[in-house]
Image (cartoon, rainbow, N blue to C red; front, side):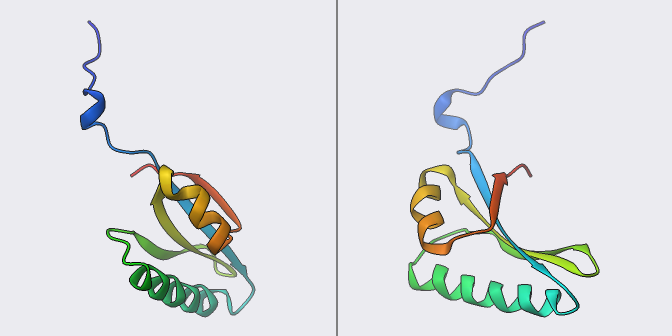
Length: 90
């Protein structure tokens, strides 16, 4: 039995998760503050549907993240300078 594949037009664009790492006892408020600035950037650039948030890795390591489509990656990476990135899978 072969797998059913969606036509190219129906496939979702590959998305990249930009990640900023924050460490130490103030990592959560720092990540939260960083998300505020990312939100301001997104609003100012009139970008739509950009998932953002913070995640706790450990109590002293939090990340701020932003998910962008691959075609936007190079331009936004130069502007926003994330610490790292990975392919985003829901």
